[in-house]
Image (cartoon, rainbow, N blue to C red; front, side):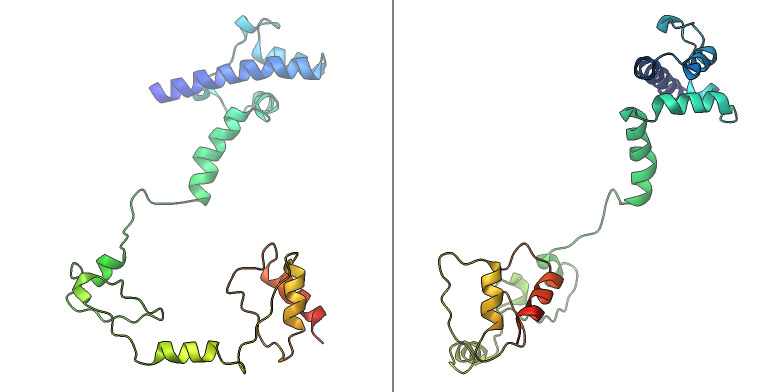
Length: 204
């Protein structure tokens, strides 16, 4: 009752405010006369007869359309509609959720036995897991590949370089290019599809 009365009173206030603005913007017309007849008060805002929500009959087409004309551009009912109807339906979420971090999963709190693998060599592990066992020789193999002139070449960028310049340089590589891996995140402002389309045009 208290909520309904409060909402109804707020609706009446919004309707009264919107009616005044509506009449001022639309000017005198048959529609204004019909609205005055539906609301009552003969143009006196203190005498307008605005029904609270709990008395509104949605089957009353004339009164409902009158309310729609007044409220369709008001931010208050639009915000109420979005907050209470649209967003709860389309952006459903839980007030609480189950979450865990690496320490929780790798520690002894949840599981007594843990086996893990990481493609990124790192000793940052939960204390209960002990030291990371690195595969011997992997770092040396990566360094050898990255420093092999048959695999890697160096290209100095001018001070005025931009994204199109990088794409042109990649497409014109002497050894030929089979893939573009932007490790340094130099290519910005373009989607993957846009980059692919540009490379197709540049490749011989």
